[in-house]
Length: 476
View 1 (cartoon, rainbow, N blue to C red):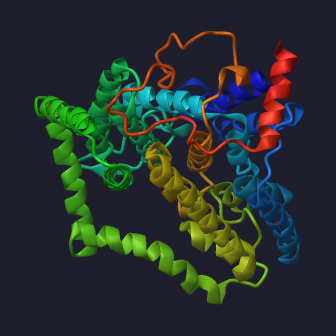
View 2 (tube, one colour):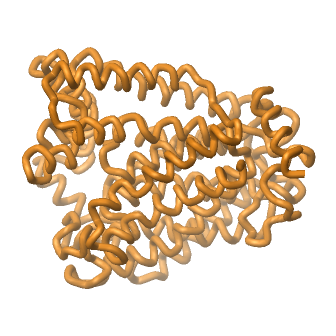
């Protein structure tokens, strides 16, 4: 059962990455049903978790249950009569969130490393596809939008759309590449196999290429946050000569390779044109316009409190799907900003409670990552946190891709805090190693490693360990 649970989590990741490809190219006629293609998978994960005895316990889950019940009550009191809209709103805000703690209970450090390595390796084909989209005309098949339409992408600059890669929209790369960058920094400085240093180096090169090719300031800023978190974590964990030399060598190699690639300079010029356009639109500097946009995301929601009904307009009304069901057209009936949407949908009281839930989750995960960094010099949880926190905190959850990365990144963070399984606790397979090279935790320690995964790591809860031992006895 536990093996099936872990396979289901891998399927969730695969659909998260390739869901857009299905909606654009493979099954464009089913674009709308595929919007929720991961919902049956997450329900299956919950069923498998219950069957395997993996029942996570967290105060956050109790609060989540209260928020679900109150959301239904408030929506009914608000006069919402469309139950499909209400169900979609509940699905958006709550259905996938428990997966965070299921992943934390079902996965260990080695599993987190494998899943993260898969994300990192996928940065290569993702970037290659984005380069092809960047250099292809708007009507080319690689630039088709959801449903196979030719006008489904967002304009970037210099006559080019923002390439989304395998995703439906550019919001996908904006959440994907920061997570890939987190594992890239991890493997460049703490990889247990020399092979992974070179593998991470190649992946890092493609991540660097993807930033200007995306023509997305959000992708650049989100990836830059991870880079800043890495720099701070490296300083706090203690600099080692081997680590500095290894990472410095990677930076030099990537810089040289980037300098000789002609399309990188072309992408950089288009990207800078995007910045100049943004500066012109705001009649100021590009950084000023970006700062204003970020500030507005926190200020405007509270300015809307005065016009928000006490019970709100009903959960789900502010989503694109809710707009389609209620008005017959896509758009934002209430607000595009996530916090503002929550306040207008749920009302001031419940909306603030839902926002507080997300803020508390981000702060709690930070404390878990901070303890790992300070006590064990383990940078990986903090790197994952820097990639997942912005998506959890204020990004829209109605788009399935952003919701998926908020949940999956948070689950990876908590799983990375678990120790590696000892020999008597293996419950995944009978193999003696990972022939694919995705396992970074099985070979002997590198003297230059920043992190160590050993006895100092916090043990799993006793009930989880007991459940794992019972499953091992069942397998044997």
